[in-house]
Amino acid sequence: MLLEKLCNASGPSGFEGDIREIIKEEIKPYVDEIKIDRIGNIIAHKKGAGPRVMVDAHMDEVGFIITGFNEDGTLRFSALGGVNNKVIPSKVVYIGKKKIPGVIGVKPIHLQSGEERLKNISYGDSCIDIGSNSKEESKSLIDLGEYVIFSTEFEEFGEGLIKGKAFDNRMGCYVLIEALKETYSCDLYATFNVMEEIGERGAFVAAYGVKADIGIVLEGTICADMPSVSDHLRATEIGKGPAISIMDRTSIFNEDMAEDIMKLAEKENIPYQRRRAIAGGNDAAAIHGSGEGAKIATISVPCRYIHSSVSVASLEDVKNTKNLLITYLKSIDVNNG
Image (cartoon, rainbow, N blue to C red; front, side):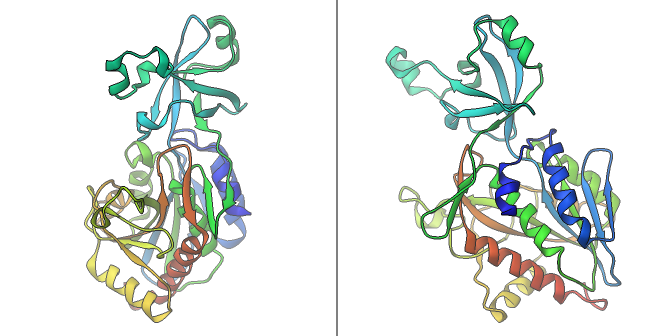
């Protein structure tokens, strides 16, 4: 299953090599040209006569980076992207290409003072335990600056649900790969960008090169359909279809594009929802601010527990996100956009 393969692959910000190779091989039969730029983005061109459309999905996932070695052989580390320190204790991780297993360790609750129990755990309070007995042993196994990812494996569970790591944004990568199998009138650029989780760095480079008229960002987005969250704070909900964004902290999305996408969804009986939150940001900021500017929209797959060791999503939402993107791209012809 392609989605499983994408989610299980390694690719934290700045270390996207493994996921890039998978995507490059998958899309090769369906595009006219593939370019890997200097920063590591994949820019795939599907030639057409209509307006220049850039569809973006970032390849990177949140993770960690090794910053030092303790005398007892444990490792110091910092975040690559927005990993909340509340979710890191006792998680199993893989380090580097060799996938050396480790456990994120913290002082057990029995040994914590009353004050320590009340405060948030910081990266400084944590370490990665690889079973090493000394600093020298750890240094012989792992390089300073090596990347770290969660070890979670993709799995189906419940009724039509999936769980795994890196749903932000392997969901978008999967949808874009599938969309490239279709034919369109527009001049389509599919960009799989690097380093979104540390400031949309890859997208700025890709967008500057493409200079799109229209930009569409595909994402795995926040979902808060939990008992402890009030209805009005639920940004999206699983099972209610792809989420169409209104705005976020870096972009206000084009109202006309959003209306067109929603009308097509209704016409084709594709369920959808509005993303009812403005938190976060994505590659759209880079696309609409490059060259002469571009009209932008974001279509997302709702994902529970995002930016943690495991997320949950609906296979139906993934399928409907793919169908909605394809439907919208086919509606763009040489005379519009």
